[in-house]
Image (tube, rainbow, N blue to C red):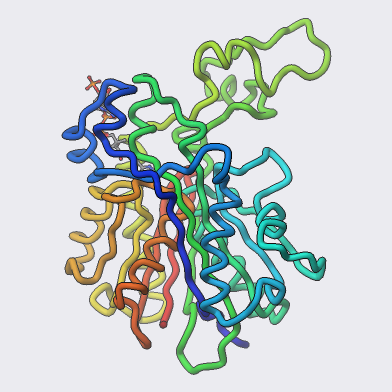
Length: 356
Ligand code: UT7
């Protein structure tokens, strides 16, 4: 059975830099608070009316495709991970296909909705299709445009200051090279905490889960209306309930435990220990989370790639952006052992081990 190798990588971040000081013009926050709690100094925001999630994805994808030595027409499967899609439906996969000018229809396009762990999930799905022999050139993209939908009032500050826009892409191809490629992956989920980091509206939930959990389910639904009217209500608009919300402390505490567990799982599966890792690329959720994990695993600064300081949390895009940056900086060399790990909304989490 062939393994999957990453044959090409690329990333794109929008030009517009938004500093913590810029955000202070919109909400009650400070550069000191943001840096101290998250390590973030600045992030990028997409150009309004021009740069959508699928457009950013296509920009990163073009670079990955070229570096893989193929043309867009040779891609036979697209996997697009995002939580900020252009449309409710159809997904960003088909929109990016069109943006890339891929007109052939002998291609599949799949959207993955696993938020912060979206890239690990997407990569793992792609890996299975390569191993089964079904596809030969799989484009895996993680992209987000958060800036168009966040709450820029003080009410949303605990979420808004953390997120940024960007995209990363890889091309997966089969390899028969002994010991090379994606060695193993582990995926996890626990729906118990679905609402702890979520954007529940607009949606078809009609308050069902909230009522079951004993939470406030009064979203201004019209009890007399027979059909429709549940996705968006005036109350949601008036009370700012169309934004993401997060129980930051719970997410932080759970993340640090699950990161370490899942990294150890993939390492043990292959008979390695943390010291064998040449480069660890954690999902960029919070610099403090990455530093905690680094310390627990006794990794040196040289073994870890962080860029959240410059881009914030770009959710599904953090790992492929960081990988592409590290590769461009000469930090990813032939034969290196790489480890990716992510944790986030769902909760979902996972890790992947690759021999480059
Ligand atoms: O990739 C997605 C996964 N997400 C994460 O991994 C995020 C994990 N969680 C975190 O990174 C942290 O919990 C945060 C950075 C989000 C927050 O840090 P914290 O130390 O947990 O702060 P907190 O939520 O407990 O809030 C402390 C205080 C509160 O004020 P009071 O109640 O103590 O007066 C907040 O209202 O900080 C306040 N606060 C802010 N102040 C200034 C919250 N956000 C801000 C802000 N600027 N942006």
